[in-house]
Image (cartoon, rainbow, N blue to C red; front, side, top):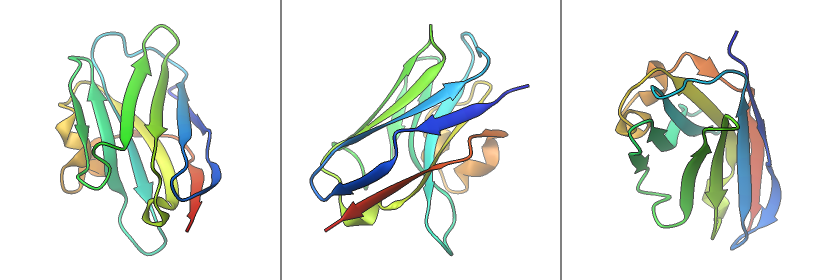
Length: 128
């Protein structure tokens, strides 16, 4: 059974940094797509950043240059380094994983529909 557990959320002032982690209970070996999504009340879940087993990454325009996604394949941990945080980054952040899909699927319209395995989420609050 695939289980995902996020950690690292919290409250930070604008301009600060946080690093989210997502521990995945099984290895997808060399065929995966992993992503970070975020959601605010009343809104759809949107893709923030994705990475696939081919080494490709994809980012939403709103976070390019500020967020970095990475994966430790040996430990089955997905990371999201978030720098220069803004108030509009405030959201519940979720990690997700699936068998191989291009990383750009994460940031595509309705990209969340392509993922079947999800964590419970971790709250990020950025105060201005």
